[in-house]
Image (cartoon, rainbow, N blue to C red):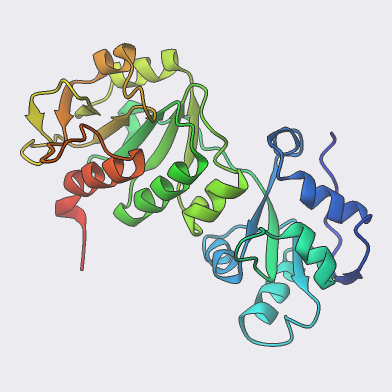
Amino acid sequence: MPRPDTRTAGVRAITSLQNERVKLIRSLEMRKARRETGLFAAEGAAVLVTAREAGWRPRMLAFLAGSAQSGVPRGLVAWGEAAGAECLEVSEAVLGKLAAKDNPQTMLGVFEQRWAPEPQAAAVAPDATWLALEEIRDPGNLGTILRTADAVGAGGVILIGNAVDPYARESVRASMGSIFNVGLVRMSVERFRALAAGWPGDVVGTHLEAAEDFRKASYRAPTLLVMGSEGPGLSPQLAAACSRLVKIPMAGRLDSLNLAVATALVLYEIRRDRLRL
C-alpha cells in the first residue's frame, strides 16, 4: 500500500463512510496497514496536545462536526492547518467508525511513525537509564510501560525480537500521549547482545532465580534495564547478557507481577535519585 499524500491544508466536511480518507484511518487498526503506510492514529484532545508540545506534526486530523469552534479543539485544528495536515470535520456516524468503541473521543490525529536509531554504548549519557523489553506481546502493557518510562525520564525503550507494535491503537491509548515523548528502538537479539556487551554501566535483568533484592542493589549508571516477556520472563540468552540479575521479593503466594507493574517498580528504584517533586 503506497503512503498517501495527505498534505492538503484546510478543513473539509465528510459524511460518507466510503470516503477514501475514512477508509485509510479505519485501516490503521490493522498492523499490516500501519506497516505499509508508516502511519498510526491517536485519539483524544489531551493526547494531541502532548503530540503538539513534543513537536510532532499530524498528517490528518479528524474531529466531530461542531466540536472545534473554540478552546483547545480549535487550537488543535489551527495547529493541524499550520502543519499542512488535512483537517476533516466528520459526522457523528463517521466518527463512530473511526473512534474506539469504549470511551470514544471527538478528535483524532494521524501521524507518521518514528523509530530512533540504535543507541551507541560509547555515546550514552552518563546518568541515563534505558529500558529493553524482550518480545513484549501485550499492547496495553507496552503503552503503560511507555508512560512509566516517560515519567522517570528514561533515555528510550528498546523492543527486542518479535514485539507487539507500539503504534497499535491499544498501545497508543494506554501510553496517554507518552508515545510522542519516548524514543522507540527496534533490535534483534543478536544486535542487543552486542550492545549489552559494550554497555559502560550495569545491564540489569529481573529474574526469578536471582538472589539480589532489586531494592538493595546499587546500580551503576548508565543503566540498561532488561525485562522479559509476559509469562516466560527473561530468556536464558538475555539473562546471560546481563551484568547483574535482581528479583522483586514477594510476601504472598504469587511469584511474579504484571510486566508493566514490575517494570515500574524497578525503573523507579533505579531512577530514585533523579526524580523530582
